[in-house]
Length: 620
Ligand SMILES: *[C@@H]1O[C@H](CO)[C@@H](O)[C@H](O)[C@H]1NC(C)=O
Ligand SMILES: *[C@@H]1O[C@H](CO)[C@@H](O)[C@H](O)[C@H]1NC(C)=O
Ligand SMILES: *[C@@H]1O[C@H](CO)[C@@H](O)[C@H](O)[C@H]1NC(C)=O
Ligand SMILES: *[C@@H]1O[C@H](CO)[C@@H](O)[C@H](O)[C@H]1NC(C)=O
Image (cartoon, rainbow, N blue to C red; front, side):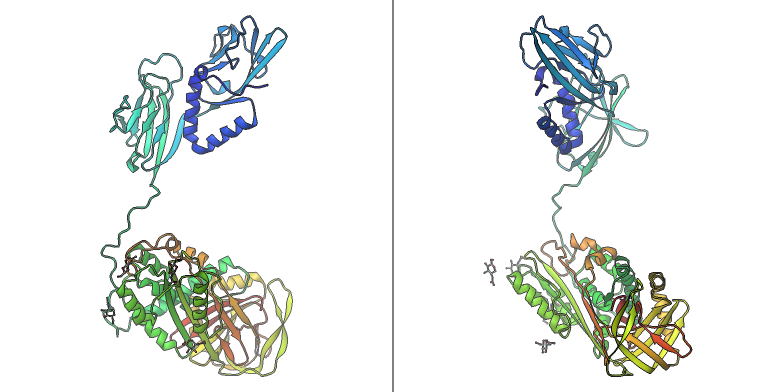
């Protein structure tokens, strides 16, 4: 039989303390209190240390004169004669605790006996231990800075509030004790009261800091740390002076541009591979770095400010490389015999793209930005057909749906087709491929008894590497670690930096081809790496929140909605379709190369000296 409520006037000071607590912990505590009131009929109170608490014995002003009243604390009687901080008042009608300390935490019960009737009231008191507060407010809202005198008695002088300016200096706050003066942002709410809470109206960022409340005699009462968060409404968007075109390339014929692009592509490719293998430590992997890089450089045409910088950093392009797009275009043309690359940007029909972006997009990427259609289904179909067309129908389903809120979609597709310079024996046989866990699976085989190939054990990589020449001046490099187990594969991948890979390519190119017995699994990979993880690891997650694409669209802020990549690769008797694969075994008495275990592959353009596809096969 516990009390539901207290009379306000009797517990006014404790309610004030309670209010401070609610402010400190904000909504969380509020909910908690509500729950307690609903679930239990016991009165729960949270009190600040130093405050005064008066607990009434009965809820209503019922006539209980002459009744025997006993107060108990934690099951023990409270002596009616006590003169300590806990005192029985008015013959038991109230119990007063002043000042409240942590020793006063616990259960208080008032027992009333009168004419064979018993009444019990009980309270559960919690004491907030510290007078240090951390308060988070958002810009423009109100902040309450709690402070309490330790005793609830007469207050001779208001507390003094200071603001910490640095470790030693303090600045006293200019407080207004008349809240009717509106232009005063700092207000002492209850002058002359033991509650010395200060209210800050219209909090500004500069209000953040540490505040101290002290008694006039210098006793420290509370320390309040205020954190001001930026208002949720973003500042107005301005593209002023940023909707300009990409700078012209001063020296189109310069010999330095091509090696800069080669280097950044290789650098980017190996970085990307290391990110992707981290998130997929043992599955099949395939991606086309040149396609992803092509997509980002297309986006760079319209990127300004910080967005341009993060993209440049992500694709390993120097900031002042104005000839990027000219050389991207040259590269695309150079590779067109074996690799077709296409780019596209779809945009919300409500947007007006800048003319300069549209012009440069056509000039460098052969892509006229296209408006999205009205319906989600129509857009999904439009995008998937574009992809299918540009990948020679190798990828027909890149997206499942396009959200109606989509503002911008970037696409890049590549399609590769290359024939082996030396064909494999026709007719299919099978072979056993050993997976990472040692399990063997039967797979169709590409086999040749005496394939002319450059093969070498590359010490730096601890891998057997073979090069399979393809039409269109490309090669498939297959890297087979020493054994099928995951440690050897990881060791190989750890060492595959851009420099090491470039050295390996050089080394293999200098190796004379010999007749080698070759076994490769005939594979077909179709992999869709998680571009959101990739973007995050490339430092580009901010583009999903806000991208400065003022060069592309200047009327409003933009967020990137989606970025996807899907790669397909098949090894057949004839060659490589749209990707790459093969691998290698270790030296036997007669030279042989077997990729019938997990391996890594690079489809490399020997002509442009850049990687086109990178993959890893663990489960053919
Ligand atoms: C786009 O341009 C057209 C014609 O120039 C104009 O009427 C329209 O208001 C513009 N749209 C936006 C969103 O500014
Ligand atoms: C874009 O191209 C069109 C047609 O070639 C041309 O008339 C226009 O001036 C160009 N605009 C810009 C900003 O370069
Ligand atoms: C697109 O949808 C809007 C509203 O859903 C409609 O008013 C408009 O006529 C539609 N436009 C086209 C081209 O179908
Ligand atoms: C792609 O579209 C073009 C133009 O419509 C067409 O000529 C070509 O045959 C298509 N390619 C494929 C693979 O569908």
